[in-house]
Amino acid sequence: MEKKYQIFVSSTYEDLKDERSAVAQSLLDIGCIPVGMERFPASNMSQMEYIKKMLDDCDYYILILAGRYGSVDSDGIGFTEKEYDYAISKGIPVMSFIVKDTEKLPSGKCENTDVGRSLLQEFRSKVCKGKLVKFYQDIGSLQAAAVVSLYQCIKDYPAKGWVRGDSIDFEKDTLYKVKEYMEQIIATEKETKYWDGTVIIN
Image (tube, rainbow, N blue to C red; front, top):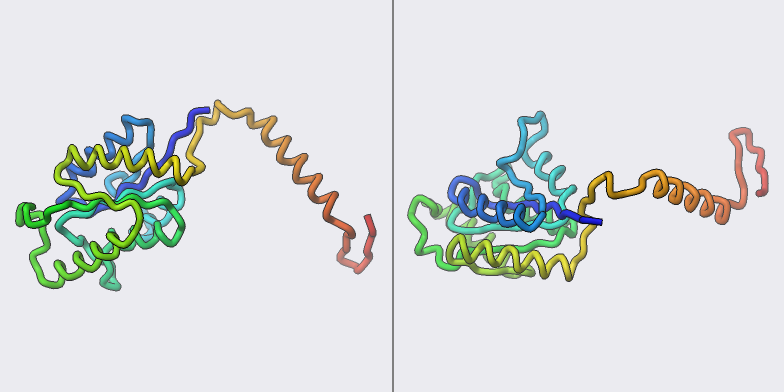
């Protein structure tokens, strides 16, 4: 049965469009399903509510971090950092890719305030203490690192993934689960108590 994995790709947006696109294409090329902010529809949910909903359905999480901290929520914490923290809290396997030389980035792709630079440095330090952190220099090295890391992550942390509906015998599978569930009830239930207090011993 062919299994596909859904991967959440997280990063700041405007400065990393090309990097996000390249990683997403690499994921598609190897049969995975990339998910990211560019695919979010209009919704009545708050941005963070929708992000959490999408993350809950993902098997793995990829963070791309470069020269910007990004937009912040009402509590002063950036959305990218919140995505990262939520993925960690839910036990989703995380792979982080950090640009090696921020000083080589164009000024337009870097934070231009002391506050922004400080937030970025703190976030970068947090991520570097995590697992599966790789440094990249350009889009090509980022793509290669993402694919290799994902391959290793799937081996080390197998996820449920997604399969085509027509590849499963749903009738057989459902009947088996119902039979198994009923056997568990019969084996464990010792008495049935009705609303009027009557007790019947099975």
